[in-house]
Amino acid sequence: MTRSSNSLIALPPEADQALQALGLRLRARRLAQNMTVAQMAERLLCSPTTYRALESGKPTVSLGLLAHALWLFGRLEDIAQISPLEISMLGNKRSQRARPVPSEISDDERDF
Image 1 (cartoon, rainbow, N blue to C red):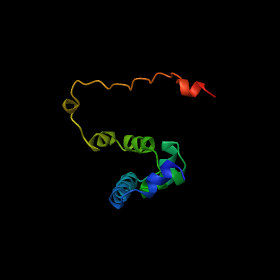
Image 2: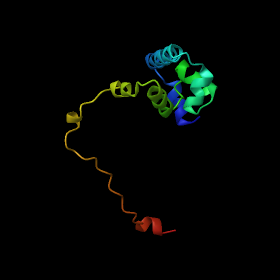
Image 3: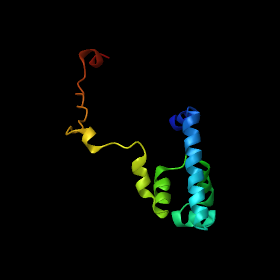
Image 4: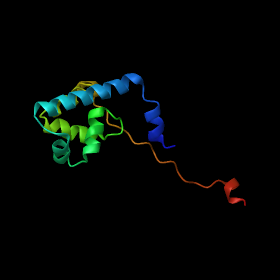
């Protein structure tokens, strides 16, 4: 079983409910604009099945598709409301990469 499958199995019920609620809100916006699933899928360049999965709150749908849908509805700024963080909280620290470990061969490894 892949890691992503494990993460989907371990998805907490609260997270699943939040995704379903988000899907319902997307469906309401689509219906308010009198668009069919097929029309919305065409605009998003995805299949109707994939768009239905987004509206159903399936956790396997890509974030890119969600962002595109929000953009089409004129609500892209809503993404900023997901776990908002003030830039000042980041401080002036730059991320540091892990230093590479020298690839030296020990004497024990040379003895074969």
